[in-house]
Length: 185
Image (cartoon, rainbow, N blue to C red; front, side):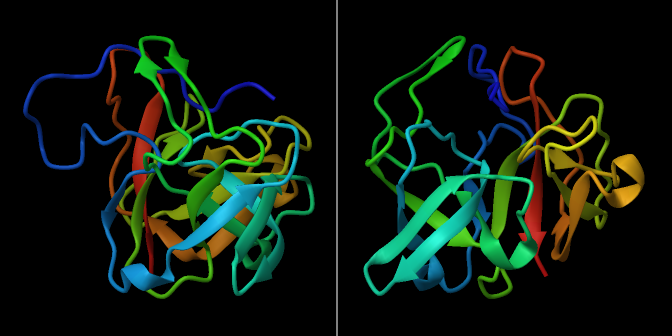
């Protein structure tokens, strides 16, 4: 699977708060204790801000995998940006969360109040308060990609009824990849 976000040089200018935040950054979190530890149980690397599927959960944490066509709001979560497993950010390169490396994770069923930066599929124009859709990889949708509108008549995406866009799109680096902030409502 292609990367959801490509890193350019980081912006070094002051802008509206949140408009330089990279994917996976949480900008608001009430009840931080609901963030959880997760492990990538596959052979594929994952990236911050990526929507992933829950394989299992125990009192020790979650096991997650890349999104599949069966992803639903009840079985999904977002990878948070933190220092566990991340070694470098350079222009054009981000060393992703490798298999077996722990990461911070928020299940989509988390309590109200989380606001997290996610990479958005190119060409999408999210509106504040708009519904968040996740691509199922069918038709023309990108598997695990974030959309501002249903794709393929709705069959190619999953609507997240408890998450809304709380920002418009922005580019936090010199690359053209775009982000937006989504909030659990």
